[in-house]
Image (cartoon, rainbow over all chains, first blue to last red; front, side, top):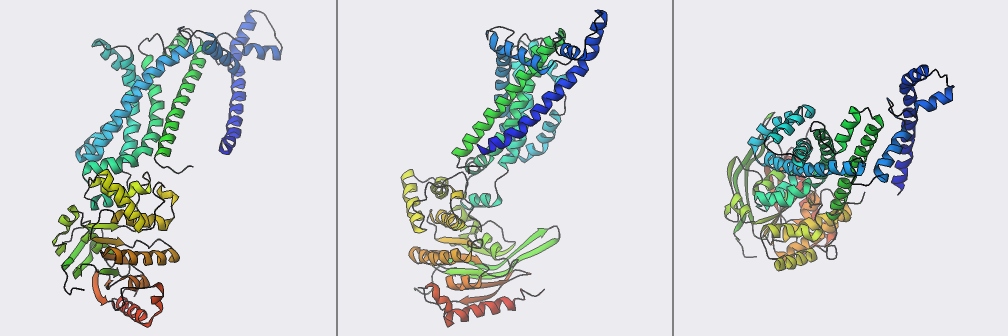
Amino acid sequence: MDSFRDKLVPVTSILAGVVVLWYVFAVILNAPFQRDLDTRANETPGTVEFIGKTLAQPKPTLPAPHQVAVNFFENTFLRPITSSRSLVYNAWVTLSSTLLGFAFGTALGIIIAVGIVHVATLDRSLMPWIIASQTIPILAVAPMIIVVLAAIGVTGLIPKAMISTYLSFFPVTVGMVKGLRSPEIMHLDLMHTYNASPSQTFWKLRVPASVPFLFTSMKVAVAASLVGAIVGELPTGAVAGIGAKLLAGAYYSQSIDIWSALVAGSIVAALLVMVVGMAGRIVDRAMGGRPA
Amino acid sequence: MTGISPAVVAASKLGLTFQTNDGPVQALSNVDLTIGKGEFVSFIGPSGCGKTTLLRVIADLEKPTSGTISVNGMTAEQAREKRAYGYVFQAAALFPWRTIERNVALPLEIMGLSKAEQVERIKRTLDLVNLSGFEKKYPWQLSGGMQQRASIARALAFDADLLLMDEPFGALDEIVRDHLNEQLLQLWARTNKTICFVTHSIPEAVYLSTRIVVMSPRPGRVSDIIQSTLPKERPLDIRETPEFLAIAARVRDGLRAGHSYDD
């Protein structure tokens, strides 16, 4: 509880600072357009009134925090969740492909890591390609994956999930290679004195030793999965999802919609990372981990 | 005492040279040694004398580059495959994700013993090292001395006749060490195992052993082998007797003769 309070004060101070800065920039960035409007309407508002107007534009360059908050609240709580404008509905669409891609990515990452740790040839041949795969800009690859898969009749959830997989397998592979190689020499020697088979050493030593590494990398992977799902929605002309909301907002200059979709995405990301972190802690406890 | 007992460990002209970046290092050179059944043999010497390396060669954790070694009349590798020995490392090396009883069960699981047999052996060996009641604890919940006792229990659990111990009490404080030395002797008397024990403590070596192998470095070799004249029954205060001190003096002389401390 104390650690929670220790964190609360610094985090809220930073948040307050960010909100203040945000308002300042909202006024500065929206001022030119507002001045333009006022000139055309032959109005000469006072300073306070002018600032008030910059923070209440329907399509501002930078929406004020309260505009985003109101939009977010309306689209989250006041709409039926079946409505295509509901953020809950759109977040769910993105979340489902995130989770599917994350599951694939984690499985793929673990399989590749096991291969790399146990087959020397794979270690030397595969690792450079895996690293290279992550240097390719996903934004360029995503439309091609979508288009190619659509051409062979695969549409909907799977293509988006594959982009999530593409982004999320990498941290899992790197973490698991490290985790599977983490047992101390002494523990490996011990298994050797028992004449343990490679599979016994794997299941009784390497796998349990790698579990903390797995959860650390899964936290990174789940956030990457969400990014992948959002990116996957951009080129598909998807009708639903956080990515689709972002794109629609950009088309119609609905900057407030863009920002509230962004907030929704961030909340989903934070929740996903938290859930994985909690799962990690539960597993750690079950494996006799020392309470921190 | 049946006179000549069959050799548990027999080394002849044993040598091991490590190839390092700074050129070859002779860790063991020309080691001749025979260890009989039921003996308690200590290997003592300064760091770099090859005492741990010798133990690891017996355990088939290192391969000798010359000479021969046999364990229970087989090659060291065959003996390891037959699980002829239990090995106790410098650190307890318990798996942190297993409770004490699951740690002791590890070798039993690997050997494929039945659940009932496992339970029986875990109980027996934990009794033997006075750790009953700590079955469900995780290693971090135990003191260093208790952890090391758990690792001894693990080495005893599968009933090998040979126990190889590599400075098992080196990281523990002196009071705990005395206590564990006493317990180890009792355990040895009760189980009639053959024990090879690496240490760098003269009192520990003299107190525990029936035979002390003094080793010296560069190259690692055996410089003296001392037969202990102490009785098998050894209370802790035997360490103040003239007989004990005489053996300790001879070990110290042996270490000095090996030019181990000139620099």
